Length: 315
Image (cartoon, rainbow, N blue to C red; front, side):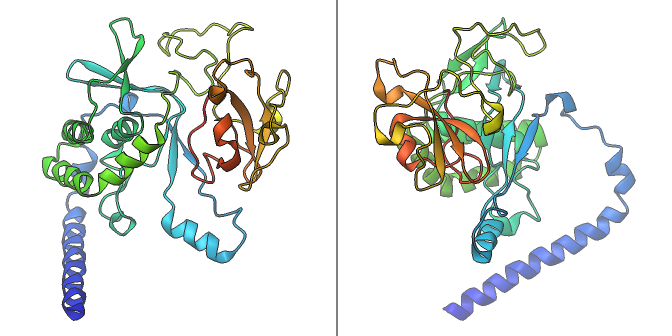
């Protein structure tokens, strides 16, 4: 039986390699034609993304570096709110959202990149999986929370349909949807178990007004002193500690560090009536990322950038 699988795998790999060589030969005579083709997707309608570092540099051993290199996937952060119009609806992804592209196994990246043809449908699909909902803009471009789709199959179907509109290769998108049907349940169930809180809408990564309801091409007004400022990505040194105080327990004291090298920098909403919703400013001792975490998460919190921890919350 083992020999059968080895032979079968060898045939598949050989077939893919031969097909690639044939396509490579055909490419030589098609370069000019391919270069002059007009894309259906305007550059202005593509998401603005920033790559998040793959954390090989801070690993303690060579083995750890190799494991990160081989198995961790590049993550991306949305720098400006991404709006995608589909069937009369404007789907909106808030600035600061982080994702890793379409879930394509690494051995297949030579044929299909996670941020290639499936980038746009993958971005919207990842957002829907995480929150089981998505922002959509009304006629005045106000972001409103939309829970029209509430099932895994519904998000998988939207992924396929948007893929068909973006890349015009139905067979590819049907195959990708099949892959989601076979393996997507793990991610879907993980996010349902996590019960990820919805994040206030932001037009840009530096936008100080949460859910400002203002289109990104209109001037933003300065936030008042009473408004809570959400800072998604910055360095520890660039954020003032004014108004941040320690909590009443050991794990909520300023400078407390958990076992993942994540340090507490204090809280400024200790008067919250729901103590589970009190949030703390945290800093990663490995990469310096500053982010927000809830009280109940501090003792086991991991960095959202270099340790694949949960996304930041407003602090």
